Amino acid sequence: MTARPPQDAGAANTDDDGRAAAAAARAFEARHETLDDFHYPDGIRIAVNFTADFDAMLFRRALNEPPMQKAKGEFGGRVGIWRLIELFDAHGVKATFFTPGRICELYPQSLRAAAASGHELADHMWEHLTPESDELQRDHIERTAAALAEICGERPVGTRSYYRQAHLKDAGHLYNSEGTSSRLPYYAADEKRENCLLILPFHYAIDDAQFYNFGWLKSEPQAQRLTDPERIMDMWWSAFEQQYALGNGYLNICLHPFVSGRALRTRLLGQLIERMKEKPGVWFPTCAQLARYVLAEFPPKSLKF
Ligand SMILES: [Zn+2]
Figure 1 (cartoon, rainbow, N blue to C red):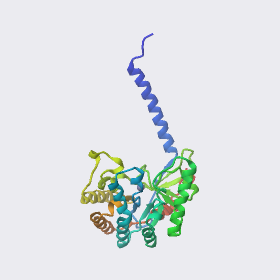
Figure 2 (tube, protein in one colour):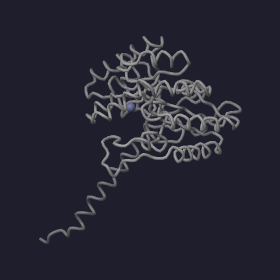
Figure 3 (cartoon, rainbow, N blue to C red):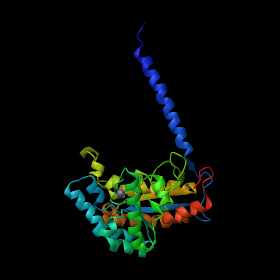
Figure 4 (tube, rainbow, N blue to C red):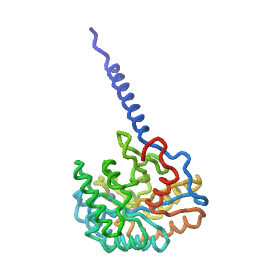
């Protein structure tokens, strides 16, 4: 009996891998639904969601980063958040603040100010961690919902998190602002094709921390960067123009108070918003406002919400 040549063994593995990848792609497709005929109300060409993840020092602590990184997070809670609220208020933009529940104990005044200005407070985990057990996930979701409701009078209807969707649905969440599977909002169900949520996608290319923060997610020194704000605004303006030209564009710009709350960046963000407002048909809703519009006008066809 002759030994099987190594390349045959490799080919068999490749076929198996290919079949597995194809099956995974089909399963993914079966639990996702894109909005093929999506459009905005008359006169609107693009929705821009300004979203801010109010992590402060919590995520820095979770990653056990050095003291200076934690101090940067603290700046976000003491100063940056106020600058972003003032920025959005000055330009008439309604933003969504994805807020870990613990932040309600640390910086309640800023959250009350954000809510009083009409901004949305949404879930961003309890202490910026996703526990594995179902029981703890439910506990964290509920604790955050109660803490946010105590601040603003309403339970959150949206999240930016990786909890199991069954728990998010049970807690009353309508949308999750994560994922990048489409340029427009889309629907995603879990592996059983149940517990469908609306996904409001964002992308790291329009996330401030990728450009302005060294040491992001424990990156190695050679991966660290501190980019000129003007360059970022040029890139985000290009992203806006490309989506605007389509006539049914969507942009979800992800900010962090400890990152974009620095003076030079806040100032340039104001200029970017003003530039966007010069064009007709630009809508700055909260994520909840957009989610409710999509759910009412474009409910899922094959998935059950
Ligand atoms: Zn975060």
